[in-house]
Image (cartoon, rainbow over all chains, first blue to last red; front, side, top):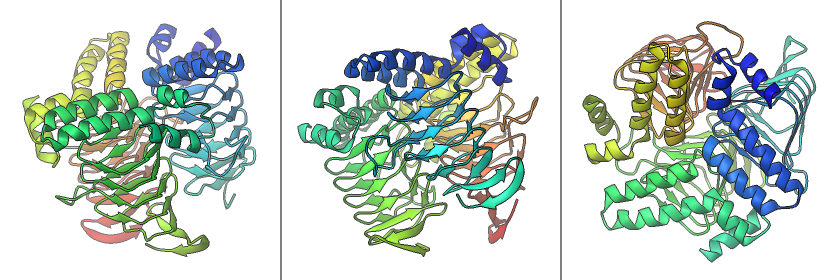
Length: 175
Length: 175
Length: 175
């Protein structure tokens, strides 16, 4: 938890102390609620897990299904309106802004939410939908709608999302 | 209300019991608050109606104006950030995801919000604006901005929204 | 404050009395919390300012950093999901809808959020990102992503946003 607080302070230029981060960052509170609800989920206490998850949603505006799998140092900035589905998998050092959705398309069963690699940055309002893979070091632009796999080291933007940068070079490719 | 709970359980693959739906689905709670506020609105107790509507918004993150007209079995998934305007009309068996807006353009008076048909599916973040008609069996893609009428059996996506499917066949048509 | 309430009543066709505006408009409450948190911020009581700002976010769903600079008669409609960054500057008579972001790109330090002119209208879900200038009388369309300066008297829409109206005439120009 201390590691998490430190990573928040480093990433946000507006943060001035660890105590400020602990008290006033809804993203930190959301991860705290998720860790508890996820423990109950793993013990098969699903109703209790969902209740705690809902309390977390009420206090933070961030909705993380207790069944989601989340790596280390997830940075949730602002956070209000985020939705993370039951079968979503998130790697380490991922940044999610407010209103980001890791959701389903309604057409799949079983694994129906995205798998997100390490060091991924997803900007505000982006919707990543379906059982797709988002590679490492990917950036997703604000309000983008991502419906297909994204390779490593790419930046994607728009509706539907297209690749506009690959390994730091400008491109214009369909996914 | 029982019919509503059952329809939620059928539509969400993550729901495992009716009691889970009743306790942990903000969409169900939002409709509950709306039914009460709408009753007071019809009795011309508008201030009371608005107060109850606001309490509903506080607890669920879903903002439904008490004057809106809503059909049977509305399925609100996640729901946070939804805005439904005073003169919006929604048919039966409609699905609305989080951050969907059925709003106005600021240019109309009187009827200034959309009329949505039956069996319509509106994905997360979509904005449907103005006194327009959305036909039956329409699907609206994530983050789409719909400003014109949409015929029956079409799928629309993008900003501004274009038709990409009509009766199940791929097309590319302006609205 | 009375001036603010009156401007809300004039701008919203669904508002029927000043007391309704005072009691049931989260946008009014959000500005109230901001004025308090901003006072503490100016006294360098930053932690207290952030705490009050967070309480405002909890009750209204509107997140305004205490350091933001806001002009007269800001009209926040619906409001849930709005994020306004620390170094954002907003002129007079601006209208912001729900889910509007005046945020950063993560690439700048110091002044890293937008400066918005007078009489600007920003529609639901729009993201205005980076230390850019939005001119007077500008309209930003729903779900638009604005990453560059916008001149006076223009309407911009899409991802990334392009100019579609200038001085009331239809155009199609890159920013």
